[in-house]
Image: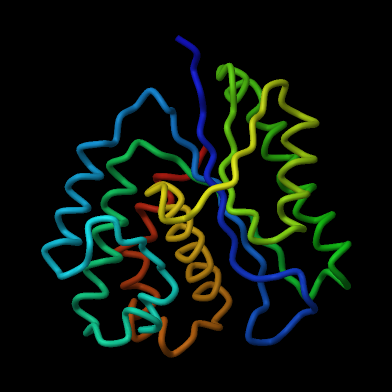
Length: 227
């Protein structure tokens, strides 16, 4: 049986010019060995969703949950925290690892430089972990093609450095691990904001102090990072 590695990708930010309220561009890879079943964990997650009044196939959107937007605008903070905590718990049980690539947009004059910076970071990651990645007969990259520039970075770098790569366009609602990528990308951004003292009021109200965030999420994020 062939060994396949799933790589789910999500991003935060855009390739536009630097804005003070959006100083970082982040994209996250969530890596999962397809031979490891997560079906029981998915069922537990969907039972939780049903118990709090959502359909079992509801798609988590971490940012709107934190900011109390869209379909979450009428939920109290305790329920929204439970949603994030349950999805994070699912992430820890699913046997995944992840890695976040972070660029400071003020150091990139335009989208070309940002593209070059992200391509370099992804290339260095793959080359550093090439031996481990080559243990898989195929790497399948899942992305919703939300940003053309990031799609190009992924396609060019993965195809150049790995011998057997397949790309699949996905709908976020169709894959729980894509929703995990969204969550871990959001948490990576929040981590970076705490470190740079630019956390928003809504994020601080949701997560608490930097110490509280580190206690509840930080140490677990560190343990899940792809080494």
